[in-house]
Length: 283
Ligand code: AMP
Image 1 (spheres, protein in one colour):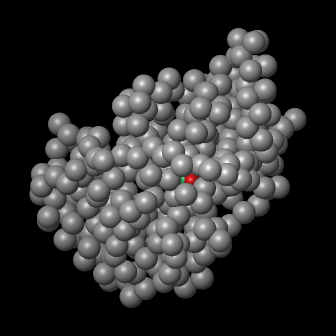
Image 2 (cartoon, protein in one colour; image 1 turned 180 degrees about the vertical axis):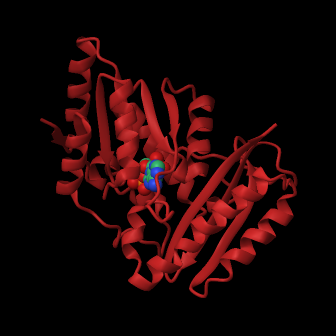
C-alpha cells in the first residue's frame, strides 16, 4: 500500500528505514495532476530501483507573476491511485510552508543554460526549479532521479546543476509521451477548449515535420526555424513564443545542426502556453 506524507521528517524517516535494509531509491519530482508522461518516469524508477518516491508539489517559486500558479490543476486522490498502480512506494506532498519556512532566503541559480528558450519568457522559472529540485534531492537523497525530455531545457539544467554542485544522484532522461494524435501529454492540456485542443496539434505537427527535414539532411538552423514557423503560423489560434535550435548540453543557439541538438518550440494556444521539442544527434 502506498503511503502519502506531507512533512520532510516523514520522508526522511521512510527513506532511512529503506536504507537500513540496503534498498536503492528512485525519485520522480512532479507538480501532480499525473498522466501517462509522469507514469512512464515512475515506471522506469520502479524498474530500476527497490523503492520509488514521487513528489507532488506545485512549486510557487517557479511561477512568475501572471502565470497559472492558482489555476494549476490538482487531484491528489487520482495521483495517489496512479502512483500506487504503477508501483511507487511513497508520495511526498508538502504544503508550500513546509518547503519554504519563515525566513527562507537561499536559492540555487544558474548563469548559463537558462538564457535561451523558456528562460527568456520565464526569467525566474529556472531559479525556482533549481532551488526546489536541490531541496527535494536533499530531502529524499535518491540514487537516481527521473525527468522527462518533454521539458528538455529543464533536463539539461538539472544535469548541469548536479554536475556543478556534485550532487550524488544519477539524472535519467525519459522520452516524451504523446496522445494518440501526437500532442505531447501535459497537465496544462486540461486548460484547452475543444477548439483549442484541435489547434494544439500544430505543435506536434511542426515537430514531426521538422524532425523529418533534419533526417532528410537539413542542417541550417535558420532554414529549419523558418519552415517550422511557417507551419505553426497556418493555425489561427497559435501564437509563437519561440522556435529555436540549441546545443542540448549548453542550451546555446547554434547556426548549424550538428552533434546533440535540441529543436524546441513554445506556442500559445489561446491563453495556454504549450511546449514541445525533438532532439537529434547528427554526427
Ligand atoms: P510536471 O509535473 O509538469 O512538473 O512534470 C514532472 C516531470 O514529468 C518532468 O520531468 C516532466 O518533464 C515529465 N513529463 C511531463 N509530461 C511528460 C510527457 N508528456 N512525457 C514525458 N515526461 C513528461
